[in-house]
Structure formats: C-alpha cells, structure tokens
Length: 97
Image (tube, rainbow, N blue to C red):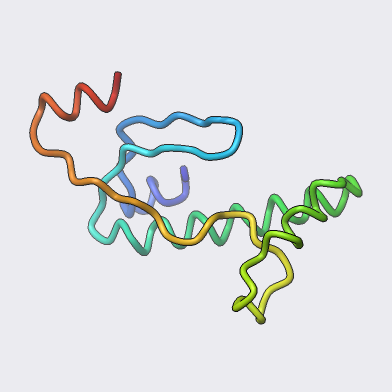
C-alpha cells in the first residue's frame, strides 16, 4: 500500500483489518486499478509466506479458489469489491469512526 501511496496512485484516509476481510477508505486517480495491484501483490506475498511455513491455511486458499480461475492455483482475495462513494464530510466522518 505504501508503494501505491508513494506513486500517488492511492490516498489512504483510513482502514480497518478484521479477521477475514478489510475495509479501506481511499481515493486515487484510478482507484480500481490501484486495488487490483494491491490485491495481486499481497496475494503473492501471502501465498509465498504460507508455502514457506507449510501452513494448513494454504489448503484453504486452494480449496476456495473460484472454479473459473484456471490460470491460478490459489485465491486469497474474494473477487470484486463493493465501493461506496463518500457523499460529503458527514459521511466521511461516519465511515472513519
């Protein structure tokens, strides 16, 4: 994420990491492509770390891979995202809190 911020492709206003997903409050000139880059990079890193540790979690990212994804063996991130446009300062504060 820091890489995308340094390249001015992502402005991160806030985030929360939960046990099985995360939420970002972010913006950028091409936010969709920045998120694709983030997911691709982090998925590769996560899979390599799981492989290095011979983690049983690796079996889960193989098992839950979407059937139509024939060009990859693992799936870390769920497909798609549900972006919601922030409509003013009140909504921004509500999401940050």
